[in-house]
Length: 424
Image (cartoon, rainbow, N blue to C red):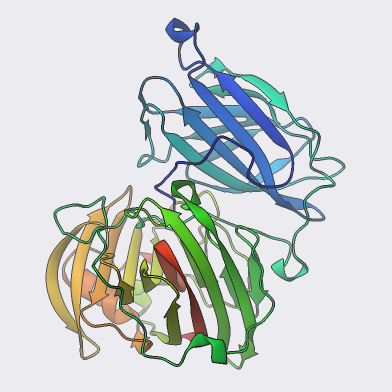
């Protein structure tokens, strides 16, 4: 999902090359520094790397922005998030994603990308914001500083989910409120579960068979904390994995969505996924998920499937989705989805509140009216409901099925004992 929240301290938070950039947003403001940009390399491996870019507006509010910079050493953008990324030679241009077009005075925007490099990975130069050149100072090259975890299959991806500015009230599509107490999963305490090796690298990707576990911290700019993921192995079609977190900050903004991914997530990492499939093909998407939530503090969070749909059969990193469908199985602390409630429906013998919103693409959220920690569903039952309402075209392609937890604030752990998706 594409991130919607951006407030990060103006500093390089990860190892790697960094460039601190300062400048003005327009010629009339040339007497004062009104913007700054921080560039850092979050992780780097043999031929690839993940870059973070943070824009801070210290001047008047900006509506609509374009960031430009130039790679000096032949680096190439492979995929990017929170903006529309293009590259011509070494010159990179990033236009706002629509939902993040406005940067309030004192506000920030966080962007990221996966890239390739060879020889050296020097920091970019020539940063501009809306065509105005920004003064820049660059730290030494990161080509020898950051390394990817061996289990990360040499890739690290972000591109957060976009339905993440949630609401506990249908009338407030951009906020979340906490209830006095947080609910807890009735499952056995997670301390009894043996877990694999933790990977706490932002956007680490742990590939296992047709799935990969994404340590997606796309909203971390709106808070302070950390998140780790691990995978315990694949048994037949069932993946076992988990995540732990500790987040503070804005209680209305999601910080992360650690998830198990089948298919597309601003690009592809695994083969044999069976995706994309056209809805009109009538194939079932049978998903089974057994998990437990352990909250060490009260949390504002949910556990949910996230389905991505495209208008085209073979989307790549540059193709934003047309539609997003979320299926919430568990929530606590007053978390709620983007948009407004449209109906209460019965699917698979269970009652769900249906919400509809738009964040640059359509977002439909089915929120279970009572929490569960186990579900076996044909996920096309939910897309079929939307098709019947005339909200979703059967010509769309389902490109991704993800299962994870959105964290606003709190600390805890999610353990998935078995997760599988079978298409056909």
